[in-house]
Length: 280
Image 1: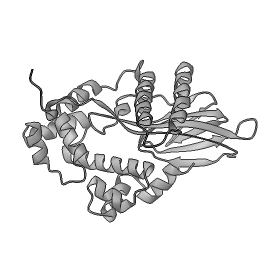
Image 2: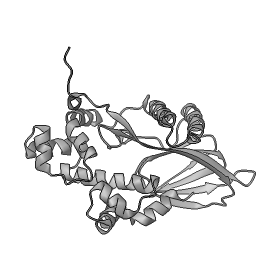
Image 3: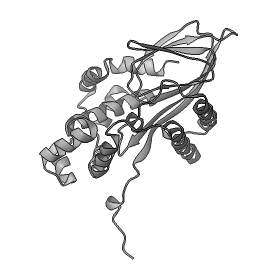
Image 4: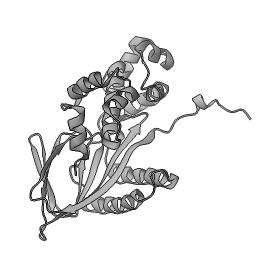
């Protein structure tokens, strides 16, 4: 029996990049919280409700239904107290990568509010996620449960929805680019050149350019830059690393260059982004 080298073993197309659950209960009196997050939000108002503004779009989310806010969507959350004068909410924040850090849920046209049956299923998952959050951060069982919860949540949300147009073709191309995407993921802090990525893919630079444009809607080096910035956003949201540390981890020369690129990409400075995302 012969064995393939590790580098030849296919990698799973789906990987959990970020998972967080939380809750709060208090009088909010119409508190407005504006933010853009590097992950998809699934939020359940137990008591009270949400009013949501996304550009010109406006919609309400009553108690008992689950709100869905896709990653990188500027959103104003208006919180309304319930009959007892308090607002209570619980949530899951989730980012699952498809063949690398590219957002899996970005392939789907997600609803603003889940249907009642879907909401009930996701609320049960939020209950379990909050129990999992009580485990020690170094406990392997915590990671195992988060992986399971991620898979179950994606199944609920995606089972009866068709991917966006061309998403299947893009996924097929992303699978072909798997060695390149893995190399980018594992070498984000190092210099990356289009010529080296093309050589790794077994393509000419022109062919790699065309394939990335079809799969991701952007040329390879712009994709690398966006992955760096999106990873920086998740580190700002989920860690206490300084901006200089994050710049080093994602391949920017220093905090100044990261800050400049981050503001151009997300419309806000990294420190303000962190403040808005982590405010409850």
